[in-house]
Amino acid sequence: MNEIFERRSIRRYTDKEISDEDIKKLLKAGMNAPSAHNKKPYDLVVVKNKETLKKLADTCIYSHMLNEANAAILVCSLGDDKETPYWQADCGAVTENILLEATSLGIGSCWIGGYPDLEKTGKEKTILGIPDNYKLFCTISLGYPAEDRKPNNNFYPEKVHYEKF
Ligand SMILES: Cc1cc2nc3c(=O)[nH]c(=O)nc-3n(C[C@H](O)[C@H](O)[C@H](O)COP(=O)(O)O)c2cc1C
Image 1: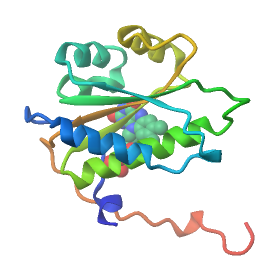
Image 2: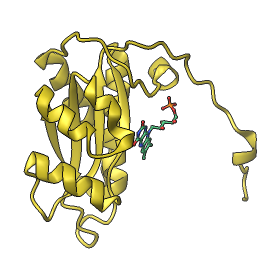
Image 3: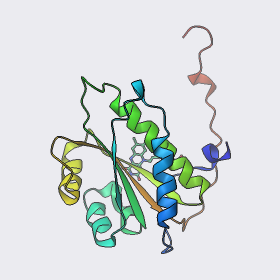
Image 4: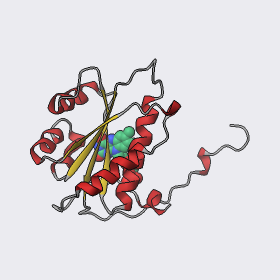
């Protein structure tokens, strides 16, 4: 899959709008990720409103790219450690699928960390009216790329252990 290597964190975007059809493809990619016991413990919030994106950008210095973004998808979860103990892994799989589908559609994306930073995610939850008992796993910033980044070609032999650690 070339998308795995071509996907880079893209933080500069053009003004070109992402169509609702493509947003649906991104959501569908996320919803087809593997999930422990197939519980799918997530909700996805789509934001296209520019003012809201700017408010989200101001929640943290690492979210500045949302000022230029055309859309964002926020991955939330009830985050019930008893009922869905793998919720963070599940949300990570959803997120990566969305990033790969974005790459395949020529859309730039960046994973912006959420939980466990409760101060930052608290601000984002207030802006979006996400219920108190939900956790915000991450924000995915989206837009057509205004920067060119070379594909990754990572392989770290020292991280690999054959047969035994
Ligand atoms: C859990 C997680 C949190 C991240 N949070 C941020 C963030 O808040 N802001 C940001 O600009 N990039 C963030 N990134 C993107 C990483 O900085 C990026 O993936 C890494 O530098 C490798 O670059 P690449 O994605 O282009 O391969 C995050 C990535 C992950 C997996």
